[in-house]
Image (spheres, helix red, strand yellow):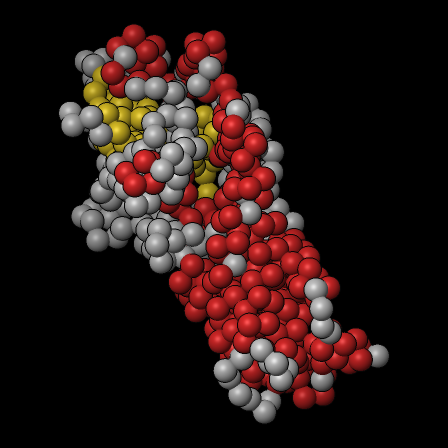
Length: 490
C-alpha cells in the first residue's frame, strides 16, 4: 500500500506536486528550534528525495523539472525558517510595511537556488541501487549547503544539523565534526530513509547503518555530558548580563531615550553589584553616537565601581567620518577614572541591513537600508578583546556567531570565552530568537568555549562549553543574570 502511494508521488504530473513540495519544505522547519521535531525534518527530506528520484526517470525535460522541484522544497523550507525577517520591515513602518510582502520572499527564493542546482545535477547521476542514489543526493545537497554558508557573505542559518538541540547528546558530536559534519550525516540519514520507505527489504540495511551511527553519537554525547566537568574560570569572574526588553520601535523614539538609559542603569547597578566584575549590555543598547555625548556617558557609567568593566554595543564614528557597529569596554580604575579599555568593530555586516553590496551603486538606485542607525557601516577587523583584569574574549556581534570557525584561535593569548552581544528585537515575537540561541550553543560546543551573551529581546545568559544554558530566561523578560564565568575546555 505504501509502495503504491510512493509510486504515485514519484510519477505525478501537473502543478499539484510543485505546491506540495513547498508545503513539505515548510513542514520540515518543525525540525528546527523551538520545536526540535527531528523526525519530521527527516521524513520530509526523504519524501523530497523520493520525488526527485522518480522525476529523474522522466523522458521529457527531467533536468528542468528537477531544478524547479528542488527549488520548491527549499523555498518552503527557507520561507518558513526565515519568515521573521518581515518583522524588520514592520518595525521601520511607512513604506517598508507596503514593500514587506514583496521583499520577504526574495531571500528564500534566492537561497532555494542552493537546493535547486544540486537537484538538477542529480539528474546526471546514474545508479542501479536506490540507496546509492539517495546517498549521492544527500551529498550533493550538503555540498551546496556548505557553499550557502560561505559564498558571497554567507548565510549558514538553519543548517540541517541544527534539528538536534544544542546542549543535548547528539549535538556533542559537533565538538569533533562541527555543525557541517553533523549536517552532512543528517542529510544522509534523511536521504537513506527514502529507500527504506520504498523498498524496506533492500533499503533497510543502509538506513540501519546510518541510524546506528546516530545511536552511537547519542550514547557518546550522553557520556560526555556526564563525564566532562565544568569548573569556574580562573579568578572566579562574576558576570552580570542585562536583558532590558526594549522594543525596537522605541529605541529611536526621542521620548523613550531617557527611559531606556534609566532602565539599563537601574538593572545594572542594583543589588549585588559589589560582587560583579563584568557587566554586559546588548548590541545597540543605547541609540545614537553615545561615545560623543559626555552627559549620556556620565550617566551610563554612574554606578561603575573601581575594577568593574561595562561592555555594550554602540554606533561609533571615527575621524574619517566612517561609522562602525562596535563593542566597547569601559573600565573604572582604582582612582575612579573611566577609560575605554577595549574596542571591536563588527567584521561580518548584514547585507542591506548594515551595508550595501556593490558599494554606492545600490544606494544610487534608491534601495533603502533597514538600519535605523546609519545607512551603511564600515567593516571592522577581527582582533582580540581584552579589557584589563578579565580573560581575553572573542568578540562577536549579532549574527557573527552563526558562522562556524569565526572564533580566531591564532591570537596570543587565545580567547577564553566568546562574548556575543545582539539585537534580536528585529525578530519580533517569532521563532527567530530560538533559532539564534541554538546556533550560539553550537559555537560553544565547537570551540569548547563558554559563551556570554546579551541580546535585546532575545535569549541572554551564559552557555557552558557543552552548549548548556546556565539559566532559564524568556526572550521578553526584564531581568539580570549573574553567573560565574565557566572555564574553557582547552
